[in-house]
Amino acid sequence: MTSYFPYSFSDETVFVSTMPVGRRQRRLARLVVTTAGLLFLIGLPFSWIQLPSIWAFIPIYESWLVLLDLITAVLLFGQYAILRTRALLVLGSGYLFTAMITVMHAISFPGLFAPNGLLGGGETTAWLYSFWKSGFICFLLAYALLKDQKSQIRGPMRRARVNVMVASLVVLMIVAALTLLATFGRNVLPTLMDGDRYALASRQISAIEWIPGVIVLWLLWRRHRSVLDLWVLVAGCVTALEVALASSLNSGRFDLGWYLGRSYGLAAMSFVLLMLLVENNRLYARLADSRAELRRLAVIDPLTRVANRRAFDDALDEEWRRAVRSNTTIALLLIDVDQFKAFNDVHGHVTGDHCLRMVADTLAANVRRAGEMVARYGGEEFAVLLPGSDLAKASEAGRRLLDSVRMLDVTAGASKPHITISVGVASMSPAREADPVDPGATALVKAADRALYAAKANGRNQVAEYLPHLDGVQRLADTGMDELLFGQAPKSDGNPA
Image (cartoon, rainbow, N blue to C red):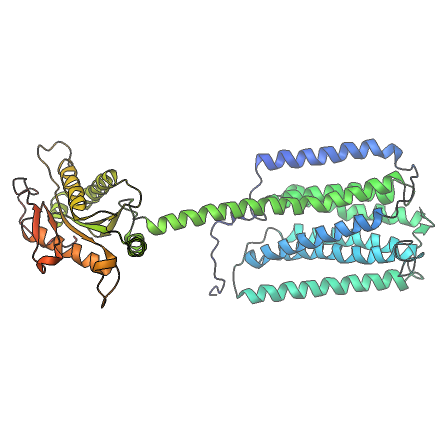
């Protein structure tokens, strides 16, 4: 099946849902669970102590819980849209379920919006809390069973969006059905509350909820492989402590166990979100680094490690416009490695590549002023951009480069130079000399190319200047004919090998 997804993720370790668990993550998770366990043991003997009814605690607690769960669900749905694993869809649906049923729990809580709540009183609230915890355990169980399925980056993105919408609709229907059951099913459901105290049935149901909870924790412990698995496991452990303190090992609402348990629930739902946010920030940092590296690679020639043709064209256009604005000159050197095809034929392409790298390094070492650039123009040709230089300064720079390249010993152990270059020099003041028919930096490139042709036609290993006032007649600035050409190879046209 052909993939219609526009991105390819061959390295799935960049996602928190597939990233392997590291030592640092394990230590942090162990610290969180240990701290939660110690606080649980410290608070357990006092969990029956009745505390004042702080009514502001419920809206603050449940508002934060809804916000945390919704953000977590959105982030998980986002990762599902990329990786297309059903486990992520299920886990995101689980967090959406807790957010929606928390809203119903808050609406029904006695004394919050109405003396007996808006949905039927304390029994409705107690059953919604039971459905809330049981439902979340079911979603975690489904996640634990599905999480080892491989990613399937297939199909159009809209299919993933449709799946998320369908899952969200199913969650809303489940929440609506459970709310109706808790509100109108009091005749068939056991009594959980006796005022603000828990009835025997409430403790029995809480004990039953521990069975699937333990199974989920065991499955996650045995099969946790990713960072997300680890922190879902931590959230499950803390949620188990919440249920124990808030509905099993305490006396009822507004005692120490109830307050402490609700605080545990808030912490449990925060862990996965915090880890998703932290890892997402790291991924964005890696993305920024990767983008910067891609931009660097886009303008660097991979062989010679100097600027490539694209970067040169952009720089030339920018410097040309700057010269037009400031009424200054701009110079260009076009450089060709003499007899490079013959060099390749004698020494091989590996040595030829080494030769080009040495020439590029030599050019770059001698061109260091701000705004100046060395670029590989194509094949064995290089370009040197010299903003602000007139013809005399550019020719001097060309002779300096010519002498530096003559000193290179590309094939170690030889007794004479093996590589020379030909240099074409052109300098223009765009404000005065730009061609009105063909404006732009193309005129400078053409001029330097004509000078380079003259240098090669007159024997190579020299610098030639382009003199526009002589109607195209070129004057050699430095013949250099006393220098030895490469080996005994015949002259060629200097085209790339």
